[in-house]
Length: 411
Ligand SMILES: [Zn+2]
Image (tube, protein in one colour):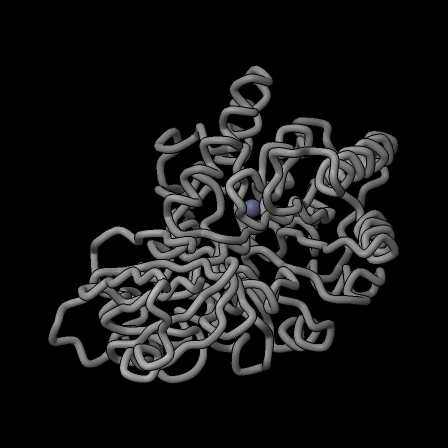
């Protein structure tokens, strides 16, 4: 028995929208898509039909960069240009929490994400132990366990992170009866101001050897670049005062991306969070390595950054996708809110590209393009419905300018 979903519009990530369209699904997979007229003729008498006469139907959304363990931080921080001050306050707050609070934050963040139509995502976490709840609702999470600190402390954290990631992989391999979607595993060297370039390279070699993914934060702030290149700026001041830096630490004389490329970090694809400040040469490094960039538009605005180079990245062939970042710098975990915010900021942008970044491109960044991220035969029957006006002739624009909530739909 098939389950057919008929909607005012079908809005695939790629390809033409279909007015009064329908998706035929069976056993949780899409069998075919077409106009209702075409599909109606094929429908069996016992097929179930869900009709959404006021809505556009989109693929489920993909959140390419978030930190679910910070989901109890909503509204705790004001928008600021002072990233170092923000991260210092965040670090102080996060370590004051109990384990129960942290576990609850991950559970709440996962539930909020699913309710906002997210079907897959990248969760970067400093404590992989609490991510064992993911996948229970069928969402496909890749957990990137973070590694940070210099010197011996960094070595110890590297070993600990490997153990946490292995544990998650074990759970997902069949241990847990409650896990409906397997948890995928990755490693995340946190950022160039929290660990050495040699450690970045070692982490990515270890991840690739095990078939795991790699994600990190790069070129998030101009301050990060000043820290790495010249040993200057507010981040440098904070990390020096906190005695976080080893005695023999020296500026690289290079910006982070070229420094890491020279250390062997970009030997394969990396999912790079932010990448807010890029030269053309750095864009080429990302393009050559097949890396993706997770752009987080509202977090970008929270820190009042200069214009994001997402269009230059796309023009150079880099896969750009959307992330929400955490609730410590973003008001919700809704990828559609990010897409709508970006479209409002860039009204001349192609609505199709923005929705592609919210769906298929995120799936591609996570190696899930054959699973989710589009309306196409063989992919999961996991959708989002968005109410659009009856007279809309451009459904993608209508979805991005609508204010109503996204309704998740799994059949
Ligand atoms: Zn982040």
